[in-house]
Length: 349
Image (tube, rainbow, N blue to C red; front, side):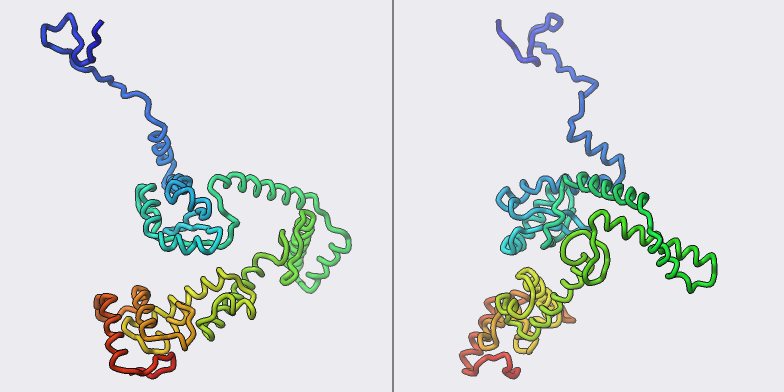
């Protein structure tokens, strides 16, 4: 039996050469899941929709950068217009920085709009989360419930109650003294409840916390102090590398790299393009290239400052940057005319 396509199938109600038109259903059928979910999320409000969009793109990180990079660089989350990443080793941070524009373009393509504009790195592995958020929320809820239970069951000894009474004995007003005594007793119960849950006082500030060493506040304070020390060391010896600094200061390679980058950006904003011979310009080159004063040449200074041209201060009148060949050509001409050396302490010509 010969089978004909639907559009030319013979029908007894049509004459020779006539065909039956294709019929279309009034109901197009069930919608696909990838159409239903976005519509449902959109109906819940902009905040939830934005969170859904962020999680949707973050979950496709291996597709955006590839399995090789994704195994070493993981997304932490999105803050404003920044995509926060964590790299397993500093070398991967440099690689991702070079690929920043490509990654941002692919990330925003997956999002369907410009979701992020820049990348930022976190050196703390702590919060690499995509789908573990619900587990952390449940864990925090369990901890809060355990704390409330311990606080309800906590009682003060007679000595502790007397100590609370003595702490407010100098207050003459009865009503205020009762309030302060209640607050003192409440604080003492809270401390005992936290101690019963395994927390301990910080050896520096005395604040109760869970963990080893010192509390997070003191840790941040120490880290800021160490960063300031690294900055001062780099300002005194701009050519110093991590191997030179670690013998004098307690620091990490990441800390030295980040402070060097910050100092380079601050110095570059104070120098105009075309300033090849000032002390600040030479300091910037030493800091950026980790070169000693005797290693500086005019060619190195010009090449380095040309690489940093977009980070440098803008003049009052806009002038387009010259080509690299033009900048290097001037160096060659000046070197041929003058046999003078080029040193960081050399006077400006």
